[in-house]
Amino acid sequence: MTVTEPKSLNIGVEKTAHSRLGEKDFTQLPFGSVFSDHMFVVNYADGQWQNPRIMPFGDVSMSPSISAIHYGQSIFEGMKAYRDKAGRVNIFRIKDHLVRLNRSAERLCMPQIPEDVFTEGLKQLVALDQNWVPTTAGSALYLRPIFFATDTQIGVRPSSTYALYIITNPANAFYTQPVKVWVESNFARASEGGVGYVKTAGNYARSMLASQQAKELGFDVVLWLDAQSRRFVEEFSTMNAFFVMDDFVVTPRLNSTILAGITRDSIITLLKDEGITVFERDISIEEVMQAGREGQMKEVFGSGTAAVVMPVASITYEGQTLQLQDSRSWKLMNHVSQKLAGIRAGELPDTYGWLTYLD
Ligand SMILES: Cc1ncc(COP(=O)(O)O)c(C=O)c1O
Image (cartoon, rainbow, N blue to C red; front, side, top):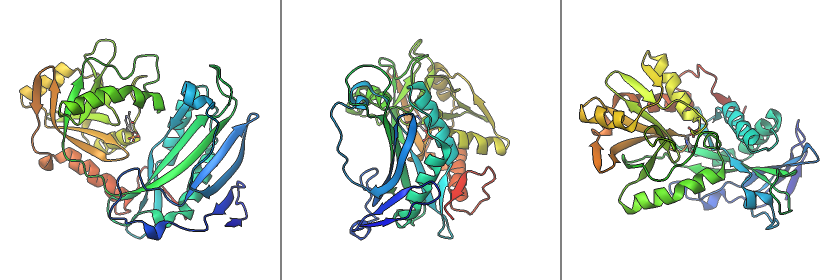
């Protein structure tokens, strides 16, 4: 075990004595199951962020009384580091992910994470484990910050202590076959005034039963409707939704029930850049089905960090199914996904300053 001198932010680094890198087959990387050698950890106590450190990835021991487990003060992010064509490693939209993490923290009465703690911790971690960033086109190192309450006293109130971890896992290009979508009109994922826009564990727990039932019926993903009227499209369980009509694009407007996807924002920016009209507005499921019936609905896809885009094969709502055309011929979805890939590979200019290079 080597302990190196802390850098600018006094991040202590304890390197693993035994790298697992050589043991892993990078052609076989089931998403989310292989973790790199190290993790970043920082604690919050007495009103201060304390002891930022990088240490070997491994189990942590904690009391079964920690409040995150009982009362759900637990939030996270999902982001990616890419290796560009020249072999340099960049991280995609760090600042925007931190802004969203801090927005989640604010809603759940958790402290704000300072930019230098997050960014330095993340950059130093990825730099240390940069050999874990895969080299094949489209693959990436998935970065998972998790932030949770650690008070060890039972009682419903904001914790006074917290831990932030960042773990990373190499992931191959995530090719999604076009998915069969089930429009959920019984369960609701989020309601106005709640925490739908927060990237918190409970939102995912809440969506699981509907997803499980949809799978049993032969569907791949759930499309959520608003909790109040069950008329308006919100998002998929882990992705935002895009509808390409004849000559414009619609995506549900952001509100307190939808996660503000960073990929969603990137796609809107790139489409608008090219003069394509993108409406961020309410879109009812009747409008979607009708546009399908009338032949106007050209492409429907999900957007998210893991897969980037997820083409939809069909949408089933209350006994009716809208069948989409073969997604290989879709112009807009394929264009934006290639454009994003080009930016991250350093082949296209990073006009919006989305990439942070490690060196
Ligand atoms: C509920 C939900 N909506 C949307 C997204 C897409 O967000 P992003 O593009 O930032 O990954 C995700 C994934 O993070 C998600 O979990």
